[in-house]
Image (cartoon, rainbow over all chains, first blue to last red):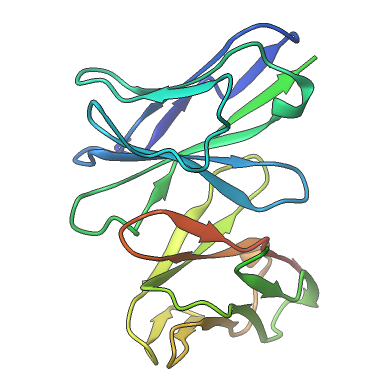
Amino acid sequence: NAGVMQNPRHLVRRRGQEARLRCSPMKGHSHVYWYRQLPEEGLKFMVYLQKENIIDESGMPKERFSAEFPKEGPSILRIQQVVRGDSAAYFCASSNAGTLYEQYFGPGTRLTVT
Amino acid sequence: TQLLEQSPQFLSIQEGENLTVYCNSSSVFSSLQWYRQEPGEGPVLLVTVVTGGEVKKLKRLTFQFGDARKDSSLHITAAQPGDTGLYLCAGAKGYSTLTFGKGTMLLVSP
């Protein structure tokens, strides 16, 4: 399966813990995007990364959230000291350099904060 | 501010009926994408339109991009239960980041 892979699919964390969400882009894609989907809301852009670079993090909350896409390995979205409001579905998408707007999504990670 | 307005929000029809859903904005987009999302899954890309007035067909689905690149429509002919899902439009301004509408939830009953 050469599609976008995300893990875990489901993640339960208690308030104050850290959540780490992983994303492996589609084969041949070097651009990764993270989106968050809250109930009753649409998908919201969070951050756009290329290998070892953050290109646009305008949608990322200023505190507790960080993202990276290292030279080797998957992209990681990290949420420190989670709160109940962080409960949502987090989706990763990838694209190639030629058609950045044509983004392919992974199955998502459903984060539940208890 | 919701940049992309989708209508209707919910549509329930019988198998075999035709339908059209809309995606409207006051902003100009360089491209527009349509996705379908099923419960518990990620959005699946259906089509990308980039040229004003462009029409694309994908089997029973017809996508149109408005001349001014501010709006789009999706028409489904002879809907089937397998078409059930959340249809999302997403616009790109510039290089990459997508702005999504809230979607149209389509339910096709046998």
